[in-house]
Length: 252
Image (cartoon, rainbow, N blue to C red):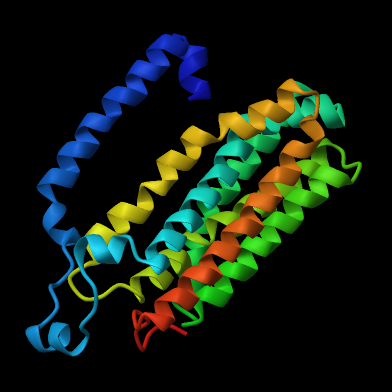
């Protein structure tokens, strides 16, 4: 994006990136068959009865999973939207360096997705893995918030915070999948994933309130608090799923 802006201007850069979405959509439509999950066998569905449809989505477990995805999305969106402002206003970091810190965080998040997939293949304890990674991300974010770190240190810490946050993606989804009855995974993922854009939409309210009231130093603290609250939702969701008999043998 930076290269496109320099070469063609910001309007052309946005148009180019938008147009690139068209062949992506075409590729997904043409190759969507490889994304289809094999339907459960009849005997598997019969051996694992459970709620379905509206009752399942409005169950205590799925509502907590929705909150888990919602709060995690709010934390990431808050970092993406306000990190540059916070580092510049609170830490006195140069705007260019603050922008590099945001790039480091987002780059770490992307790299973390790959790391999380690798970790998820090596342990079935996806709940513990997700909790640990979120806790590390919250601790690193809180370190940047409360300690007098400079630009270079902030960049390193924020890359690590993004890395640990991004690494939760795969174990998080596998943890949910292990608690979904056969044949219901599509609607469940559609429901809980709606928390992701909703979380991004809600972010301006609490974070903008802090900025407007001269409290930018609390923005990163709020991010860490949201991550920890998401862990609480996840724990409540998995406990409720176990009580409802939704946890499968693959779930720890």
